[in-house]
Figure 1 (tube, rainbow, N blue to C red):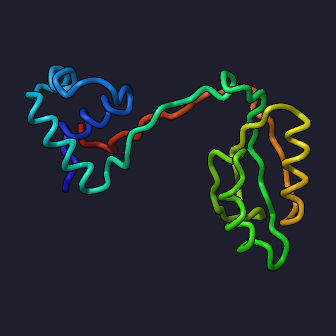
Figure 2: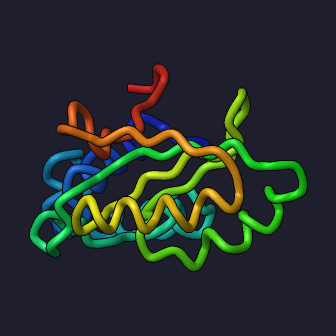
Length: 149
């Protein structure tokens, strides 16, 4: 399914606010509500739209720290880590990467003690580097078209 200009406009609107109605999106992109619904359904079916979710404030849930932690896995410890990381409640994003480190994780923690305890779990798998996030410069930026507009 090619993404034409209208599909990109719909995606822009959904990325800004996925809870707005198809009628509202239709007014903004120049389509009827049923036409928007049909295009959205096709994009969902093709996997372009992967889902909808609530954005939750880590501060309001009691997490005082957000950090990026890289892991350079010890020989033979990467595969066990890839299974174990799925169980860590602190990890909100985890990527396998190229370079000196094998893994980069975004984590939320209640406090410094929680951070220390979490690092203690990680160091059995490899060397870690921790970077405390002070503020967000860009967060959840929408994916944009390269030229179809």
